Image 1 (cartoon, helix red, strand yellow):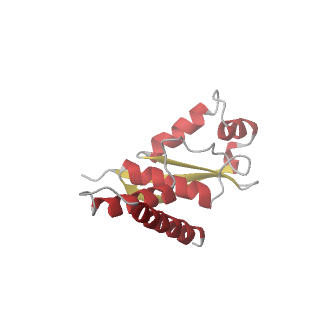
Image 2: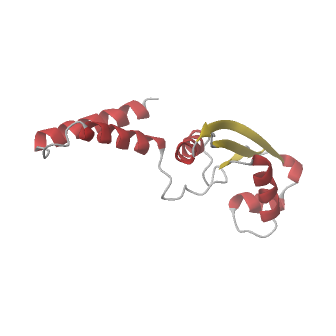
Length: 143
């Protein structure tokens, strides 16, 4: 059975400020956002208390299979849509949420290391691994 997660955004249409989130049940999550707006201290909820509820648009923007991929995709959309305070409503992702670049770099390093587990790594090999990491970062920055 697939474990589908939905990435969604909430936009305050007059200002364009955006919140990005993820959920397996978006209908329940939207109801939760509306009810939490009454009492929780969060930039999105503060705006929801101060503004007309009709000024907020909700949209599913992507879906992915599995929680790890969902958190990485959510972090990517937060960056792409500039949804962090003060431009948007998101606080920084929790430390356990890895940015997509970090996930890619870790995979690259693990792939390199897994091919050579039978011996210790020389300074040259470590430098080569670092070069691969630097190239991955450069490619990501140019995307």
